[in-house]
Length: 233
Image (tube, rainbow, N blue to C red; front, side, top):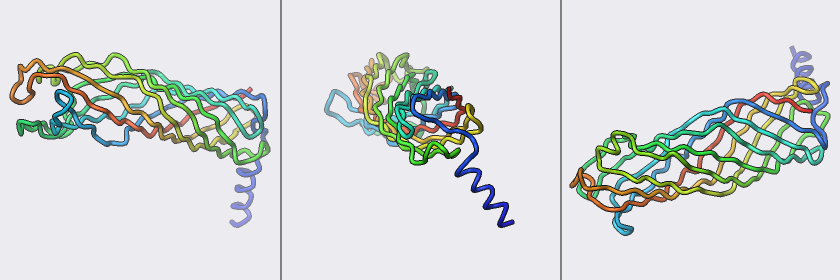
């Protein structure tokens, strides 16, 4: 049994396949999940009054595409892309009128693309099949198609607008080379995404939702998890 364990460890750590070297391109395709950190953001009425209502975004998983170019045996420039993510916007809390919104009531949906460019450093040498790496990058999040659902509209809410965002990205990941070309990948990122949302209420649902202009700094700050298959050339 001991010999089997040692043999397996030897295969994983020193591998008989060639890993990536300077000049290699690595293309990965798989599932990417964006999971906001769960923190709510206060909804402000008229720029000054805290309504006591929090907004938060739900999780979503999409097809992820990842391109990495190795500038050296240990360093790669990587671009993370994906099909558009759609997040439910949940409302929770008590309004200034003491009317209560039930926990996790979905009032809107936003769609975004979060392309992220990173510089990754590989801790293991090119002769190892198991490649651990860490990365630091820059994210720019484009938001579009933001709109209230029937629940949000029933509260008299309209004109939802969500800003774009940029921030840093931190990453840890691992590749396992199956042969000279194919590999498996798992990675986890934390991305600094802070969006500014604005909306109006026509007062039709007053006093539950008073008429006026509302704003919120939505701190999404998601953890982004990816499982993928890679091909290098």
